[in-house]
Amino acid sequence: MGPYNFPLTEEGYIGEVNVDSLKLRVQFTNKWNLNINKDTKILFLSANDNSLIFEHKLNQPVEPNEEFDTTFTVLNSTVTSDINFYLVDFQTDGGDNINFNPPNDKTTFNFQLQFVKIRDAKIRADKSYSIEDTSEVNFEEAQDTSGVSEDAAEGFLNLYVENGFPINSEISIIFIDQYGNPKYTMIDKRKIDAADVDPQTGTVNQISEDKIEIEVNDDVVDDLRDANRVVSSVELNTNGVPADINNDIKVTRESTLLLQLVADLKIYTNEISSDNS
Image (cartoon, rainbow, N blue to C red):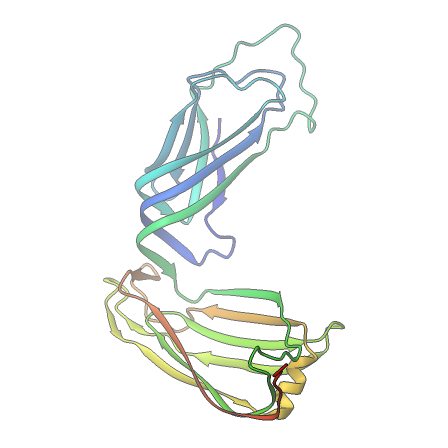
């Protein structure tokens, strides 16, 4: 039975991934009025060349309405951008007067891939991908155990970036209040260029370096105290990044991303209290 195709990423920005190990979760509930007998094979093949990614032979039957949920460890494999799933050597005990009632008798297979250790990967040129995350924050004024109340600050936070990946990025960090109103924009669509990487070997010829300077003053501190959430968004793309003849860019463990935050601040206090009782 099959093939049933599913892409590694919906956006298609990954060509293939060579892994030392990965976790593969297979989950389905047998909605057929037949059991799936042992010795039936679960098979994953590359849609590009039908090369084997993983196979598993059932060691016990999956009865009607029974759930199958197992995570496998796959070693030394190549996972391509499009994967075909098959049930091979399908076996069942059958039965009398078996009726199928679509769509109620439809069995849906769910798959999850978790890369544990990656050797290298190929990403597609001229592709983009977006990431956005919202987290709660709390900047309410607090007094430390020494009795010093920090009421004012001025200076800069400097974020140093060394990008060894052949990927352009655009970063935004915005603090908002409980109503969703922007209170303070820390970073607004700051572009970080891709590194110069050989698309065939993955060798990093030149990293991309950048410094993001963030001003801090009393007004900023007041704005942050009114915020209770931070929205971080990253736009990633490989637009204009050199690729090989297959429009792929190789990325190896040589590529790294280094971030260093350095504070250059003056903090003023207007109240020092002590308890000498």
